[in-house]
Image (cartoon, helix red, strand yellow):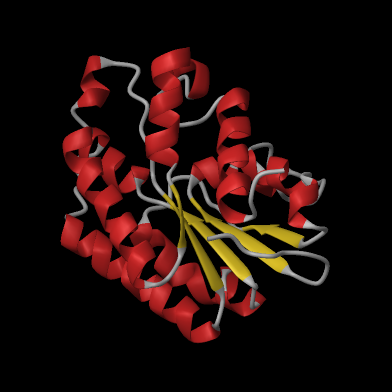
Length: 206
């Protein structure tokens, strides 16, 4: 399932640091230096207006209070969401766990508001490419949250971008650090591969 985009369409990206990627310090369109900019420069988005509302460090609970102003008020035709890795990471670095049920309930509230607004939805799997033994243990927390995102994509007729599946496959060939040198934040190559996956999934192969 793909979607048609073109001039007059608005695509809004939101989520955490993987989406943010310095966009608030970016004077050239506020797109950041990551996968959102790569998508915006691709002919397959057909000249659509691209907005980036990612904020580094955000979890689902952080998206909720800014959802109206940062997302809903833009009335975007397509909203792409990538969130979840911080809901896992904070358990291990700050002992601040987000239970799976809480994660799902909060995410559903975000999607309910978007569904009411009529926006087309894209959900990107949160992903982890472990570069240390300690990070491998994060899977216990993250995998159930990825399952939630997959279930929500089905429930809300959203396009699912299988980022964890595909980047994990590529990491087996290239090495995890080639795609995300800290296991979480993509390298330039990682952002390029994520952008290509998004475009292939959402608008089709060139």
